[in-house]
Length: 98
Image (cartoon, rainbow, N blue to C red; front, top):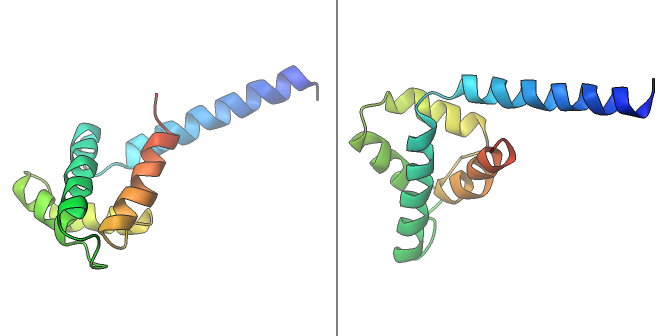
């Protein structure tokens, strides 16, 4: 297989992975970005993370979403506490960003 073909296959694979990720989102992508901003701000003003999803849950409860299914998805993506939502889950969004 030549180099150009490998590059083309890799590009197709990455595009499919990105689409699979976006299809798996349990709420609107824009809400996730708002969540990350909210949690980040709360962590900065409340002496950091207490190793829970307190701020994440707080944000989600204010939205019209299925809180438990979103939390399950977040935990599955590596967000076991508020700081991991920022460090792990937000990183996944950046990885699959435009």
